Image 1 (cartoon, helix red, strand yellow):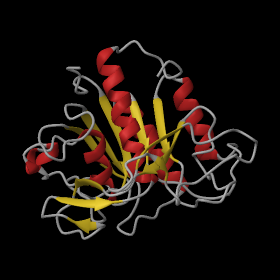
Image 2 (cartoon, one colour):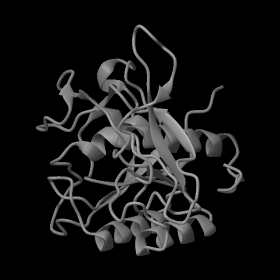
Image 3 (cartoon, one colour):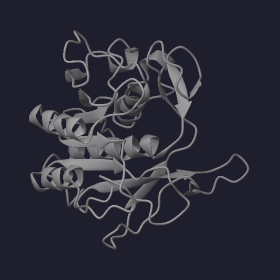
Length: 254
């Protein structure tokens, strides 16, 4: 359609980003390391955040365009809120979301989550996400990987105003799209239907942070991962395309 996310700012709250990966060259508008405040450059010792950012907005440069993200010209603001093992505190994640919004993010990707299960949306992180949406920011949150059982939506994916994203999969012999077995199911603790959407979440090849071995490495620059963490940046990238096409769209319209 001619839209590529240009002019849109995407916020990624995760494990950081490999600033030297060719797929992000010239498009990291701002970064902050909330785990190591003494860090002198954006980095990602885990690899999860780099992979997520690549799905949403990687240019595919390192692979000749083969592994291009959904919105390859969007700008990125990166908040490292998770440590090298992928863990972190709720308060740090909340600070990362607030920082990303303060630095221009129009859509924020949150490929993380936690208890309680099922959550009812009254936890502090969910309340913050709802407030962000009410302020005009689109928020996309991973549903979680605790399926196929129901009542497995945690926080902040239980937040009513966010776009909660589950994972779909298909096989070479059967290309029909279906909900992945691991993808968390609702309803939430307050009876809301979640997730709103599913996007592909199995065998997703995206940017690999240098020195990390997360997933199934394809080569020095790319690796394959599965999870609702991978499905969510597909939604985030799609939001960036919509905002690129029409910057006046409000979160509810998106």
